[in-house]
Image (tube, rainbow, N blue to C red):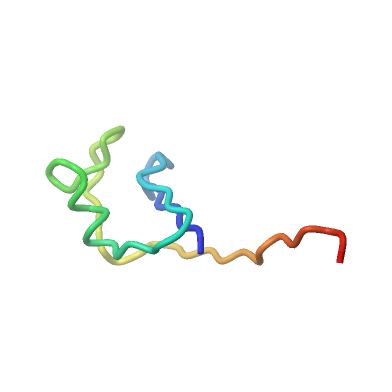
Length: 61
């Protein structure tokens, strides 16, 4: 299941994962001081917004 983590303040893509999901605390630990590298916003383990989209199926069935 794909996962994309984005800064809620500036929209910077912090992490993209195509297979295994990572918990928020592991993703935040990847950044110095737990802040967005673009705007400096403090990252939180509590999600601000979650969006779920259906998987696009290939035609030909």
